[in-house]
Length: 365
Image 1: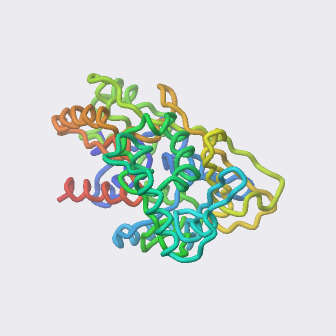
Image 2: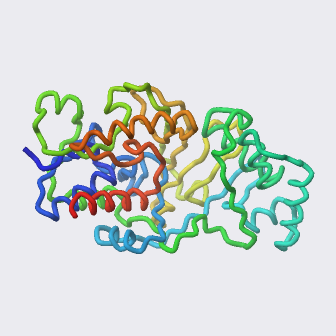
Image 3: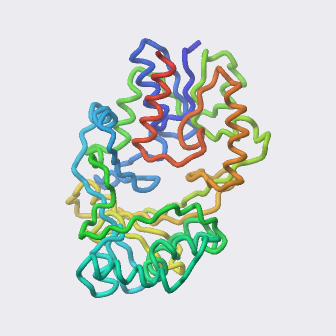
């Protein structure tokens, strides 16, 4: 019997395993995939660390979390500065003075603010009834039409008029020439990739891959004193209240016989007519100089059983349903639920680590 059965070898499970083994606990970590690190898994192709499940840039303002991850990996100084393509136009992200200067041929923050305020005033939107009206009221017509509408509709698979307003609570407008996407103090990517980081976190734990939780506990119900579950919370309870909704992503990755394909790690495609949301060129995350390059196109998709769930659909209906599952989870004193699927919300990586450390602090106090 192990002290903990940890279901999922992603970031939450790996951090919990590290903290538990440090305290002399025995851990069995299982994952249904054939690798550790969950969605931050990186795989070497042509000498390039490829983000197999999409781009992951570590950023945080939590100094404790930053110091924690630096114990297990060396981080480079990568700064996320994506660009967006709309038809034959190219814009800097996030929305900043470089964006506005290109869009309207202006130079000063006062000019940019005047244009945006005039567009918002002309639209005369009261209480927004949907995402489109919410976005228009925040940024005006031009930014919405060129940089938000098509991208958002691809992400969600629905017209912006059919999406609830609360999905976009705010859209930051930066009235300075600053392409750094994140405002966090600390930012970077592990020099050796995320997989190595997770492997170090898992040292001291037994790891079994290609292992299904339901099959394992059916054959060995007493395998551990307690379970840490990072899978889908609705699946854990056999969908007794009905299934929660998720969005998924499909990736097309290819090796190109060229040194530099797009000149940037992340290029968004904001037209609705282009089926993918962005192209990732992985070598630029680590300033690679390899003769070849590897790119990945990302295609948002509806989730269905058998497909990897990526993003919880946190609308009112699903949040209410999750609350029922969360109440049920609180009756299971032998199980700790964590991660984006176990807690049914999107987490940045630093927030996953913070959540795991907080759970550990409570569990081992």
